[in-house]
Image (tube, rainbow, N blue to C red):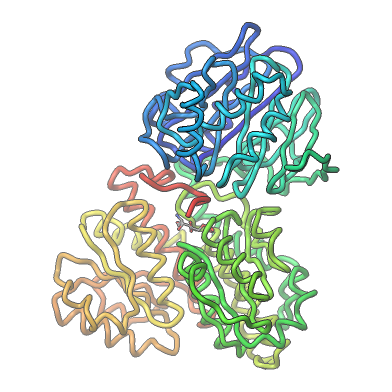
Length: 611
Ligand code: M6R
C-alpha cells in the first residue's frame, strides 16, 4: 500500500511536474493523501494534503524547481488521512524528508525514546520515527546513506523508503524490506518508485532492489549496499512494458480498458506455450516437472480475486491432472499448523507478486520443505523471486484497483499448468488435452465477441445498480466465477453482494431471496448444468429475479431467467474465462451508473503489502 517515488537530476529543473505525474500512476496503490518534498537551491520545500492527489496539485501553484524530490501517495495505516499525517515526514529542523510504504512495528517504543531525547513529532504516523532516527545520525556527521543504514538497524517491520536531505542536495537514498522498490537510471538522472509504471516515462532499464538493500542515487548513477554496509554488484533488467501500455488509451477508466484486454491476457498467457495438439511448454516449470509429477498434494494459495483464480486452478488440477489439489486463502493458511511434507507443492497466485499474506504463506511453505511455484504477473516481484519455479501470466500492467485481466491471465496460466501436469502425470489422455487446448486457443476470439453483446449486460448492470443486495450463484468451475462476480460488484459499486455455491443456497441464503434481490446465476452447459437449473427453479419459486449467464442459444435457460447473457459455446474447462468477462463488465457499469470511482474504490489499494 502507498506509492513512493523519488528523483535526483543534474542541475536544477522542474521537480513537482514529474513527481505529480509519477504519483498519478501510483495513485492506485493508495489515495487518501499525498505529498512532495523538493530540494531547492536554498533548502527544502514540502507540500502535503489529505484527500486525493488533485488537492495536492491544486496547492502547489507554480512548479517547484530543484535538484531532487520525493513524493508519496498514501493508504493510511497509522493516523487519519489528514494534511499532518500525509508524507513526506521531516526531522525536527525540517532539513530532511522521508516517504515510506510499509509499517514500522516498533514505532511506539522508538518514538517514546526519541521524545525523551528531545525530538518533536508533528504527526501520528509510524513513519516519522525514521526521519528523527536519521536526523540523530546526521547530527553526528554521518553521511546520508550510512545514516539511513544505521537507522534501519533499529526498525522492525516492512518498508520501502526514499530520503532526501537539504545538506546533500545531489543525492537520494532509498531502501527496501518486504515492500516493492525499483530504481531506474537514465542519462543525468536517477529515479526510484514503488512500481515500474512510474518509471516507464523515464527509462526501461531498472534495478530491482532486494530486501535489506540500501541504494544511493546520484544523477545517472547508483550504488547499492547491504544492511551490513558491504557493496552489492547490482544487475539491471529491461522492463517488458511500454509507457503506452500503462495508460488509459482512450478508455474512460483503466477498469474498462483492462476488461477489454482480458482476451489479450489469455492470448499472451498462451503465446509460444500452447500447441493445438494439447502439448504445453512452460519453461518456468520445466526444471521442477519431475518433482511435480511425484507431488501428492498441490495447494494453491492467494488473496481476493487471485484466490478465485486459485480455486479454479485447484478444480482444474483435480479433474485434469489427477492431483489432490486444494485452494486456500493465504491469510488463513499462513497461520495454520502444517505437517512437514516434502512431496507437496504450493502454487502462490498473485498479480502484483507483493501481497503480504501470500508472501507469508509462501514463506511458511518453504519452511516446511514444500516445492514452491508462482503464478505471477509482475516480473521480478517478490513472489517471482522467492519461488523455486513459476509461470508469468504476461497480462501487462494492471492499474485499476479492481483486478480483471490479471484474473483471466491467472486462470489461463493455471489451465496451461494443468494440461502440462496432467500429461506428465499420465492423468490426461492426449485426446482430452487436445480438446481443451483447441477450446483455449479459440477463447480469446470468443471473448472479443462478448463486447458486441454488451446490451444485455448493460440491462443487467442497471438492475444491479438499483439494488441494495445481490446474490451470485454457480457450481463447480462456475462457483469461483460467481465469487469473483460478487467481489467485483461490491468493490466498485458498493452494492452488497454475496457469492455462493448454487447448491449451498438452500442451506441459508435462500432466506434472503425476494423480488428485490437480483440473483445472478452462472450456468454454462457443463456437467453440473442440470443441477444449476434446479437451483434456478428454487429461486424463481420464491419470487426471485434471475440474471443468467449461460451458453448462447440455450433457450431453456433463457426461458427460465428474467434476463439472459449468452457466452459462446466452449469446453467446460474453458468456460470460466468466457463467463467472467460479462460479470466484470456488469460490475464496472454498475459502479459507473452509481457514480463511483471505479478505478480507485474507497478504502482499497492495489497492492496489499500489509497483513
Ligand atoms: O496482487 P494480488 O493478485 O496478490 O492481489 C490480491 C488481492 O489483493 C486482489 O486480487 C484484490 O482482491 C483486488 N482488489 C480484487 O479486485
